[in-house]
Length: 302
Image 1 (cartoon, rainbow, N blue to C red):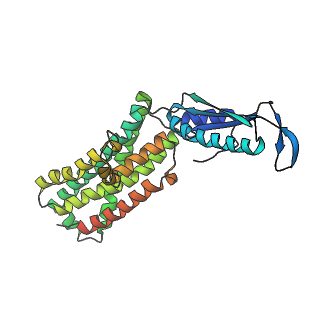
Image 2 (spheres, rainbow, N blue to C red; image 1 turned 90 degrees about the vertical axis):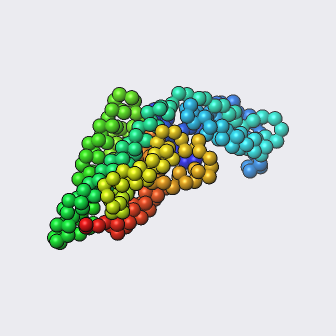
């Protein structure tokens, strides 16, 4: 829980609609004070009465239910110290307003983006590199000063151009046709695009590994399907990971596609920035290093 202070009423309302603020805690004096013994001052004095209001959206009702007992306990403790007998220092109430609702498209579209990137990266790069080797293009390149990592990097850059076009088309259709949530507008699209570079590197690396392991073109598709289908089923693309048994969830949570799709959803729907996703970014970085090293070692000229 993070406390944010200094916002105006209009700013709070706007932030709650976007989902970046979950609950508003409002404490105001209502002019109904009482006389009481102030233990600290050691004398009599006028103690003001406060009205405490919790306002939350439909999607933050669970947070309000957790916060209300804390405030209730705090008020009771203050009453015990200030008013040993009868009056109360404050009154707590809760208000629920319509807010940041999770639509179906907000869950589906990041999964579709992950699915598209996975299939394009794995199948596209594996077939391409295998055909280049089979047609002796890589064998000719071996006679030049070009290095393995330069070929892999060049292929990543060429795929990046087409990925950006496809990414913008899918997000644009989701936003204008189905109301896909972009908390910070097109700034969110930019962060999603930068975040997808991690996934592009990992999935293309898997394709490079496949092209270096298989011995003939007919083996590329079965091997690629064996590596992609489990991720499609286990990484929360089309239904939540929480629906799986607990032991299987632990496996799902460490797969690269899970980190990628969860990160996209957090950026688009919750408005989080990339640097606020240490788990997802850290997991993708680990996978990038592992897959990158493996892809360079599995690369074959002929």
